[in-house]
Amino acid sequence: MYQVAADRDGLGGVGTGLALLVVPSPTVALLLGEGAISLKTLVVGRVAGAALLSIGVTCWFSRQAERGGALGLLAGLLIYNLAVPLCSSTLPSL
Image (cartoon, rainbow, N blue to C red; front, side, top):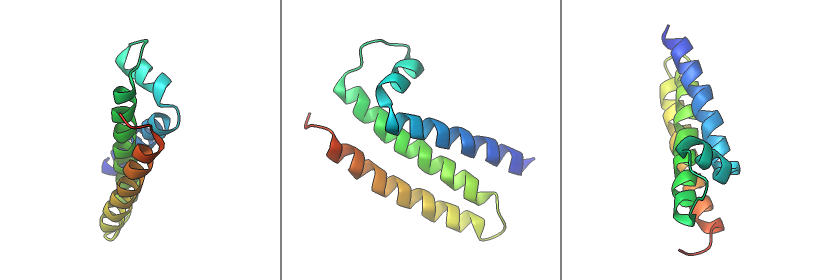
């Protein structure tokens, strides 16, 4: 049961996180139900996308044997710590 939940949560987190990172404007508009999206909202959306992607990777790796949890945590933190500075460096200053 736990493995099925980890698979589902991992795939959902990775999918939503990638959508927020790659195409943040339509994804944020779909999630919030708003048409006009400000630049600050896009920044928050991209950071949330990085967080969801890292949570999804952590869930995906933690479904494995005893070392999977540590490997998943390390991979998730690495992805988040690399993605957030990259997202903030590609946007113009607020």
